[in-house]
Length: 124
Image (cartoon, rainbow, N blue to C red; front, side):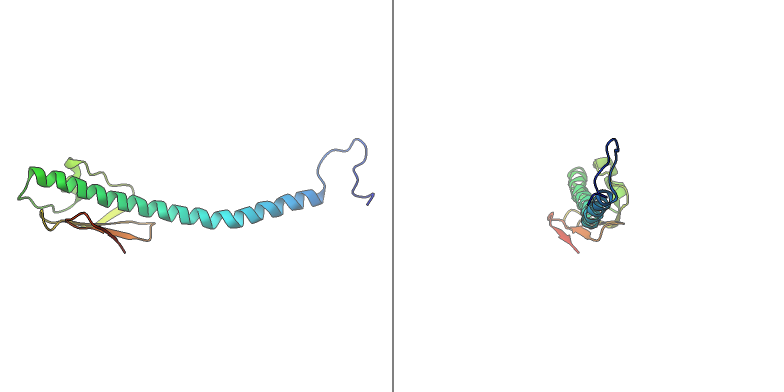
């Protein structure tokens, strides 16, 4: 045990102390990295869901000014407040007042969100 004692005037950490710190960091990283990726995926899905809800709101504004109009794509809604997030793609967006639907998916997210003319969002 005399080997592990520090001599007078010596400063620093022992090898065992450094190994314990590295082990603790490894355990924390093993827990944190999977959680971080799950949080990112949820964030990407939330962006797609938010965009599809914003498309619905913009469509309502569009139809209030053009009751007989038809939405062909998201470009028709850009003037009514629709701003699409980065890396979110609308695979379908269009219809009339009673038949409007919009579908959005983030390229890194795992979910596709669809909203109908009644404002009901479904996830698939």
